[in-house]
Length: 420
Ligand code: AMP
Ligand code: MG
Image 1 (tube, rainbow, N blue to C red):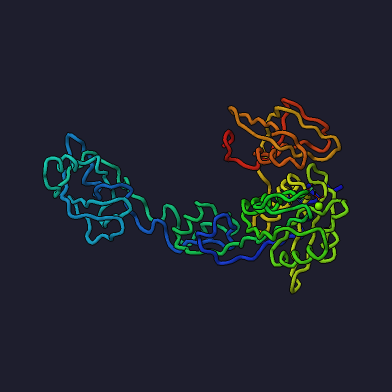
Image 2 (cartoon, rainbow, N blue to C red):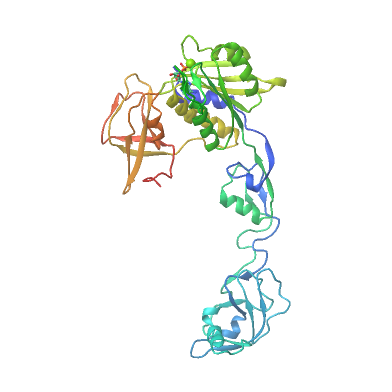
């Protein structure tokens, strides 16, 4: 039996990093930058005001105080977006807004609150002069050219994952689009004679197809584009027909038909179309799995992950093997989900030496994480997956973990109540 790590290595070895495309910034969230983003100019591009106030010469206001204000002649007004047309000479001040360029001659900005502007306006006096009520060091409230970014600097190196902050930085550098690794299109195919799409009353003996939805959701959650193909029946014609569409995607994910039952013919069909290996992976749930590469039109090689049919097995196998493959395709290099160490509050039983992933709910009280399993752990009990925010891991060689023991939990979500 393969260990989870061995299975993962085999999967990753056969999955390529996808090509990069010129991508509009608004579509680039979560993508990997494929070339260095260099600054063509300084940011800020010029010295500018960090406050609404008066641009002055520090020498003119040395020693100023409320008792002994420095009175300056106000020569004009400069808003953000304007450029100065006149210099500030000794004895002068220019009313200036945050973000406006510092006019020549000025070196310091005095905020309104440290002038008598409000008092003058309240008295109905003209603001043709202004009293500065406080001295400031030279350069006070001035944001210097290049203090954020220097021209020529590689601000964001290739390989960076574009989060909202990176998108903002790219926009501030003037990029409307960037070269980024494209999102994989992942075809999702459910297989089984018993399956029915939700939306119609259940026919006798049928169950609704849930895997298409949970797996498509995971693909989208982690940045891929799901391409749901629907349901293939357990016969060669149906499977072959559906497979053709899957071969247009960057990866195909099927569920069910990989175990040892009479109708599990996914494996025969897939073996015919490519090099597929069938594995027993030393994990619970999700022992039976298939993985390999299908031959698509024009010699395209399409990785195929054959998930088990049971709904929890399908999701857990996707988290452990499908997600790393998806992230690698997207150019990511950190492929692990975050793991926390928690205090187990109940019991996990491991009766056959596999790695057990127990659905759990993690909370934080003080500085400690606590993990409680979310109910019956059968691989068909999907509600206990829906109620979980993590998978508590009981190692292969540990037959039982009990209350108070430290357990590693692979976090599925961080932003649930009680965590972060
Ligand atoms: P199989 O791998 O085909 O033996 O399926 C294992 C179990 O998973 C059976 O109980 C199936 O009915 C169930 N199953 C398979 N595919 C799905 C699906 N797409 N949605 C919900 N349950 C499924
Ligand atoms: Mg089946």
